[in-house]
Image (cartoon, rainbow, N blue to C red; front, side, top):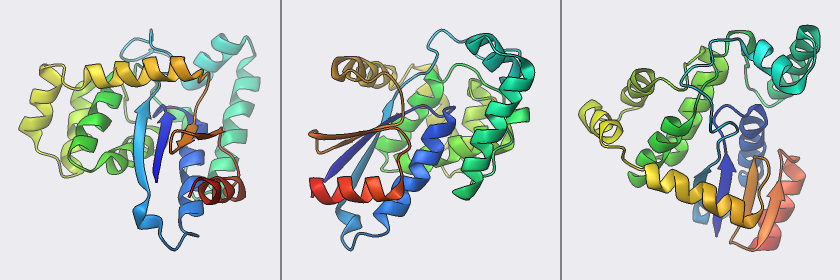
Length: 208
């Protein structure tokens, strides 16, 4: 079974959804036969490499709320993440353009390690204050994860996997995806959002 997952590495619900989906996979006896493909989705394609403002400031501006309300939003999602074993340090998050991060995920996927890179980038952004739009920072993370520096540097300089990112986004628009995470099971059964483990188990069972 193929499961395609549209997500953005700076989407807090995507990381939560990833953990819940993984918990659902653990209930399956034949989970090794599940082929997971990460698809690109940019929450803000027009974002600069680094926003130059805190996540709290960005949320307050984007949603027209006060700083206190934005802090409360971050606190709430952080508490939900903690229940899934995730440590969000959103006060130190460094949001920015994620196009290059998605290119890196596609590069890793071409080597059979797309999930490894997705996990590393999400952990880096939410826990370690990784500047998600900075190519040098992304390169260092990739090297730490076991990828060859020269190959990663070459990929970035040659605009490698840019087309794959755009293709994912065009397909998302064609399907009608408006938000992430979005899970598509064998191209016929969709689950939108960071649903409960039970919902993912049901979807996997239906699609199998």
